[in-house]
Length: 90
Image 1 (cartoon, helix red, strand yellow):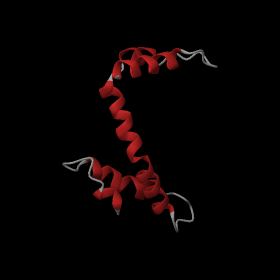
Image 2: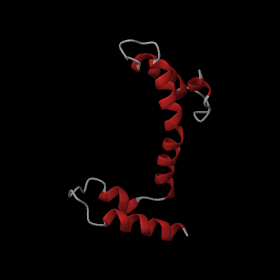
Image 3: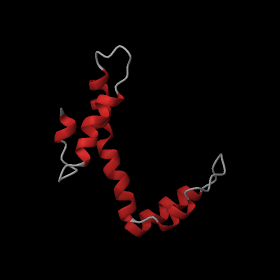
């Protein structure tokens, strides 16, 4: 099943594109379950990071939410268990 899914992924990637971009060809050719798992892990946390950014931007007239947003995100990188949402749940 995984092999069929990877074949389908590569076929869809190779389908004619509007712009000729070959920058990912080598990665797609060697992509495996572990490589795709990194994207799944990233995608899982996007809504939490968007919510944190919106929370940090609230009440900030200039909209400069990056410094307060980045502080809890940086601290999450130092956690013994990086999947634990505690630092970003503030």
